[in-house]
Length: 181
Image (cartoon, rainbow, N blue to C red; front, top):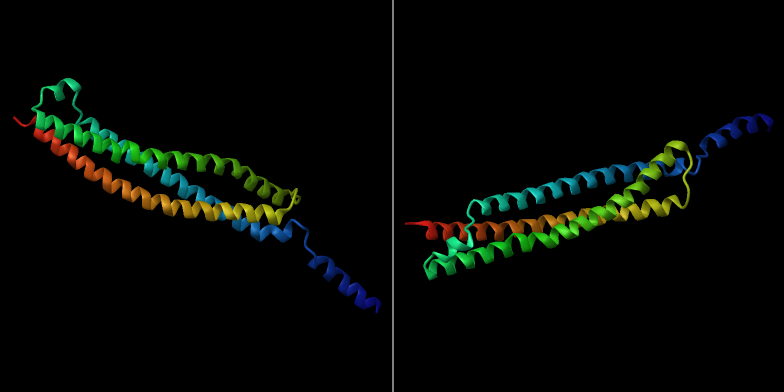
């Protein structure tokens, strides 16, 4: 019996993980998902900024001053004003809410990144404060939310780009009509 106890006791002690170790896989999985989602959100933000900059640059090459518009024939001036209104609605007005929503999400995401860092540091140190399972579940929920938002934002970006391209075409046409001699 004594020999059995000497054999079983070390196995029992070895098989018992610390509280932190029992959450290691969940924390590492969360960290991986969080990092991937952070990269995807960052890339999307860059893509959105590139779109806005591209449309702004395209419009600046077609811009007309009020004095130039005033010298146009009434139908050409009306076409120009209509095209400019449509262009602003399809670009500035369409991108602004998406950018605002993205910025709000990035602010929240950045704040919650500290929790992911704390879990990783706690894992490395062997001690984590609070309910680890609840923290991991909450943060995994945010990862899922981030991925869903990215899918929605990407679709919305595609819709906006289609409308903006059409409006840019109208603006180019109005510009060509107005500047044709």
